[in-house]
Every structure is written in C-alpha cells, then in structure tokens.
Length: 105
Image 1 (tube, one colour):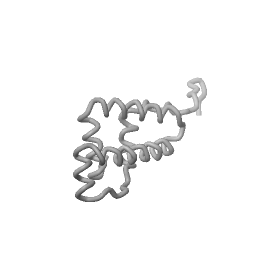
Image 2 (image 1 turned 120 degrees about the horizontal axis):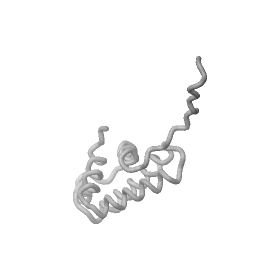
Image 3 (image 1 turned 135 degrees about the horizontal axis):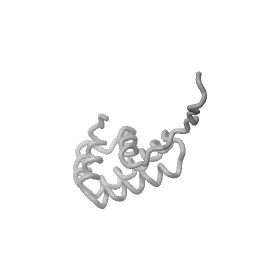
Image 4 (image 1 turned 90 degrees about the horizontal axis):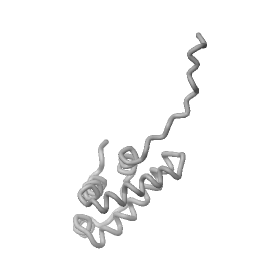
C-alpha cells in the first residue's frame, strides 16, 4: 500500500503515540462493526481522519509546522482509511454456499 505524504505523517504519528493508536483502533473496529459495506466505512473513516488532521494541525507537531508551511489543503486520505481497516478491522466472513461433497458434477 502506497500512502501519500499526508497519510504517511498521520500513520507514523498514530503508531508513535500509544493513546492515539488505541483511539484509532477502537474507532476503526466500531465503524467496521456497524456497517456491512466496506466502501462506506472507508469513506466515513476518511472523513474522520480529515477532521483529526485539521484538529491536530492546530496543536501538535509535525502537523502544525506542515500546515503553517504548506497550508492545510484537502487531500485524499482514502488509502490510509483502507489500510487501517485492513490492519484493525476484523475480516468479514464471506457468504459462500456450502459445499456439498456428496454431489458430483
């Protein structure tokens, strides 16, 4: 998975701060548990990540200095959202038809 610079900064920050990591692990799991559609969950998580970036850009490094230097422009955080879902959300069980070993085809 290739993350853009903004996504990589968020990811590194979250992994480097245990309280932030715990918060995001719980959030990702809760979002994933509440929705059957993975695409909708990724979209919602992307919005949450953007709000987080906006908030952190006011108070925490390295976000604050980056925002001051480059301004805070909306950028896609979709790859990061999907990556976090793969990392922390329990995998969905596939609804496959049961195999009938007694039938021959």
